[in-house]
Image 1 (cartoon, helix red, strand yellow):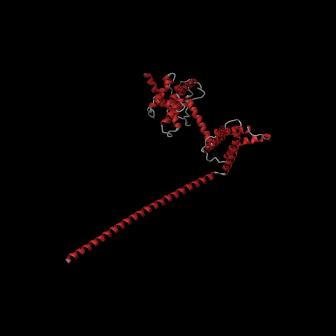
Image 2 (spheres, helix red, strand yellow):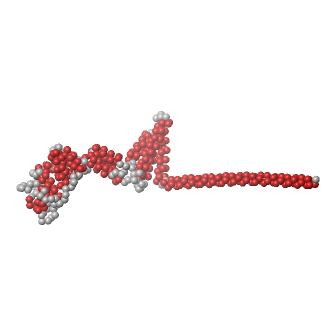
Image 3 (cartoon, helix red, strand yellow):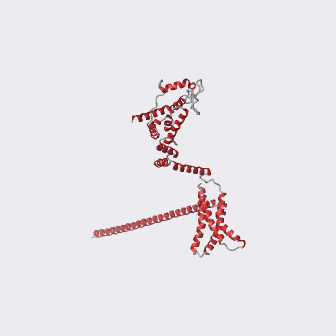
Length: 410
């Protein structure tokens, strides 16, 4: 029996110990949970405080930045406000106030509504200053300022006339002149300020502006005198990317595309030159081919000052008579002239082989033959050379003969 009670007592002691342990565990858990919750709240509070400090620092930096910007703007403004600018602004203010007042008095005296009087007076004064500021900007950028000055002085003159004609009575009428001068005072002294400024900010000098005006006049003359060439010129510039083609090169290409010849040469010019060659040959009493051969000899054998004497040239006075028609005496030809004639007649082989005929040159000569009165029969070495822009005389003769042969086979 005692054993049973002893065991019961031990069981109760064990239960009480386990209860104490359970309660201690619960208290420890509650304590740990409370500590974790407090730690979490502390971290959240620290995070909020850090975020507030960060936002405060950002606000302080932004405030300092804006303050520095305002300070820099004020410093820049004060730097620009030189003595002459400050004086001009003071004069402007002192001139605008009385001018506006007496203009309003004058306009109200004509039984105009108050709003209309204010609008007209402000329009005249503000218009003058719009033109003044625009002219100042144009001066800085190197653009012409004449039109702005005309508008500026016109608005100031309208305001001055109103003030002069409606000024209060005064002995000698001096007040009318003073009030008229107030309308001119602001713009005049702003002009005086501009006279004292250096012109280093101007983008172009007077000589450059004159050069630009001459260039514009030249372009207008080109457009009016040669409309077809100018249309092709615009096509070339428009087809290429902006600024990649030189304008003068584009004009040369447009001329060549339109007239098929070098710059300033047209089919009519070549035809007139051919007629002039015929007239000159007739005046010498020789054929055009004789003059062409003489030119060929001059090209092949220029004067060298040797014992053979200089190569004969075309005489500007015509033949000197006798058997030496064409302006060349037999004695002046010498050995080289005879050799050259032999080459032309085929008695000796040329030292240089014939140059292949360029198809573009053939097209130009064909176009020339189409506009000449006699067709291919009027082709000569001189007008063929002009059509192809110069070149070797022998090559021009080959072009002429090739086109003549084409026209004969038709």
